[in-house]
Image 1 (cartoon, rainbow, N blue to C red):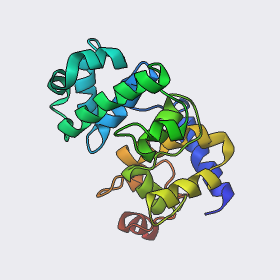
Image 2 (image 1 turned 30 degrees about the horizontal axis):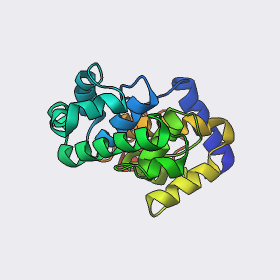
Image 3 (image 1 turned 180 degrees about the vertical axis):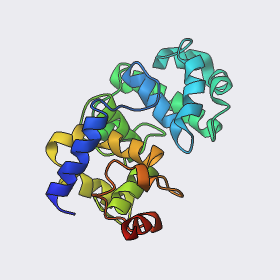
Length: 216
């Protein structure tokens, strides 16, 4: 895929959704961090249901530590892997208070040093909370990047690096959100909505639906 086609793809996505953001509910970098930790192998809807009850009670590292591990589990027990996630959140809150005065750091190295925070989680926080041009490559972005030809790669890190290199700079900050939303609602894994896709004519994916349409 050439630069001209990529530029047109992101221009259309921007025109459709000028100010994209995460579907996780949050009102501070800390709330976002906790929500993203909880979102691993869980839906945003499920996480929001839990945090909508948790955050009015505890939305700072000190307040969550005051709940204690069992108290925190009571709020997040509806989320998959909640035991491990709750333990990581307690440890993360302790480290934030000890090392960062209770604030969420805005560097990758410091974020990835927190329990339960990997590269993808760090990228989400850096991008969404701090406006840094990072790419949190999840299953949606990996699929869309490979399927469309925007930035094919054999693994998530390869796709991430290729996206950072190939996406035109004017779109970099928001590209992560556009690609996730496109993968979640249009370019679905099992049933891609090619017929109603905004970028169908620019996509390099050869699907049965597209081929039938071309023959007609």
